[in-house]
Image 1 (cartoon, helix red, strand yellow):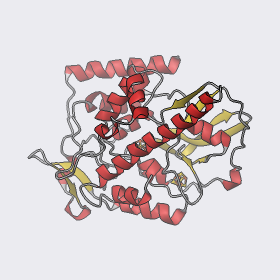
Image 2 (cartoon, rainbow, N blue to C red; image 1 turned 90 degrees about the vertical axis):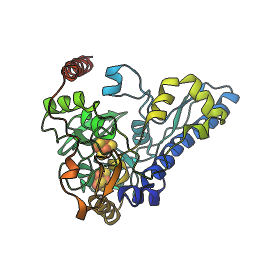
Image 3 (cartoon, helix red, strand yellow; image 1 turned 90 degrees about the horizontal axis):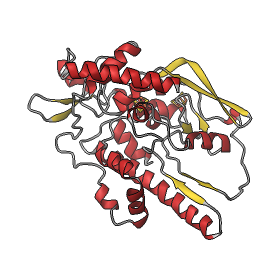
Image 4 (tube, rainbow, N blue to C red; image 1 turned 120 degrees about the horizontal axis):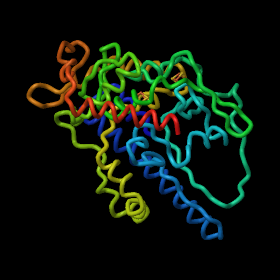
Length: 332
Ligand code: SF4
Ligand code: SF4
């Protein structure tokens, strides 16, 4: 992805900085898909089976469990780590030295027997464990100290333990934007208190849908336009085969992704990105319904607008359903 556009996004440089990154991000996802499609077509023309994989948003189950804890068809991250395309950073995102993690992966499956490549040796891993990716997550999904291990082939990889993926569902889903420190926000004007434990996280998620995120900052031009891609035959084929994924993309508005975007694989530049985010201010919805960027010297109580205090009956039921879906998922 374009790293200059990312810097404007992190620093909320202007009202269109979010849209510009969204166009670049989704456009890159489509580029990955088209490249994978081309290679798959080539392999099929040589008599092999081959099928491209869509980079994001394509989950094994599209029911409530699938959406709450989404598993992709195939983990491109795991393939990238085990084949040496990149290595895991503390966040669990794939990265490279002097580039960081702001790129997207594409892939395909095939019956062609390809020569395997080796993982990047640990001593060449880009990640210096600065843990900046931990602090750019408004609801702190990544643990600062604990790691988890993943065995891929004959190698064990590790990255940070996830405190609770629902924290990302809420923040990356745009249902809350204010950081734990209350000093900056994502591009979402939605507000919920920082959840201290699993119970509070489920409570927050059950209330979160009450807030209909309207990300567009007053004056913003609108972001990624799916119509642009309607005439592209490859993308059209994907839309026909995957209507649910396409509907999801059409309705999505990017407001976070900070853990992936902040890291430049070089401590000085990652720190610069972090400072840009910390000094970017907050996005708030004003009483007149308009959404605005407030710079740090203008932040006051407005940043806490829209914290709903009491749960409605519907939200209590939603909380019970979420808890049940999670328990079933964990046990399955
Ligand atoms: S910000 Fe990058 S280098 Fe720092 S801990 Fe996270 S992944 Fe590693
Ligand atoms: S995308 Fe945002 S909310 Fe999700 S883990 Fe990364 S920083 Fe946290």
